[in-house]
Length: 465
Image (cartoon, rainbow, N blue to C red; front, side, top):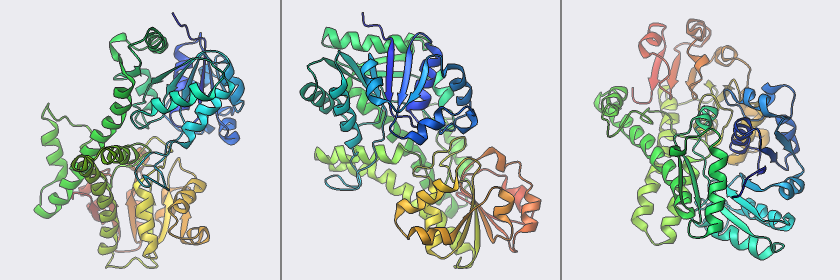
């Protein structure tokens, strides 16, 4: 039986860092080394001040503090960690391609290939390679080809172990997962042994009944499908929010009514500006591209509509701000509270706030932003990435401040973009008095009580109101 003593994880981001920290915490007999070529990121993981970890997740600081230096290590020495490891997790970014065939839909696998080539070059003994990044179905086949044809004659087993973490509750999800999915080759003795080796790692704390094993293709496709189903629910309730506005129905009441049907359930039925994050849009577009590549036009069109609805919801929210402010926001101050795509994370990838801000900036609004966990550097990088304006223009048009009160002072309107808990406890009387009148509040996250805000004098607008 293969017993894992040393694990290497390539990629110290939102998935690799927390996942490996929990494995190290729960399996103290296994040495876990997280490697990355980004020296600044590794330095942050090693910072003595645990509040400066590069990934913000509630409870992560305690997990890292318990295991770091004992059996959890963060390093830029990639080759050394690969050579020492029995099992290597690949947890690098797989963004949507911005060039060539599949542009705008297919996953860009260049970082995955570079990892595979590095593993093949360095390895001198048999290893288990685990796909942790979200990948298109049958990526394992390409990995196996690279490893077997460019290496030193050693044997590799490829496993798929997709993550099902929700940012903001990642540590909780890792400690008590609904399921751990492991895909491998169940038809060979070597494949079975590799699957069992990873099962044994998770079995340190996960009940065996919650560890599912499949063939590798089913595992890869399950991750894309899970995210597609969740995103579909968000777009479905957002589509109904627009219908509610036209008919006088309350989308919250509709969501509660249908959510109490046990066949449907209440989760992911909260109307909002739209879903964001690193997975939903990327994975659905990947699914669309795979369907198209097999000539399944109707399947591709079906899933693409989820993205179309999400983009429409973000645009509609921004248009509502302009329309309410007398069809012009030029020269008007709009305070945006929240930039992260959801609360309890500093991840901004595909955040609705980016696209709403971009729309308002195109209308020449003065946009002032506050988020408790997202830095000014990241906010500017997000806007620069869109390429709508020059970097100099973005720095002239927006301001990033350190409190909600500074952001909202003398503002024409406030737009709540992230459902941070601290926004509930703000002194909204103080905010209203400091704003220009009439004062407008746009809540895309269904966070605040509409009647209470109306009593303070706000003209209140929300998705589905």
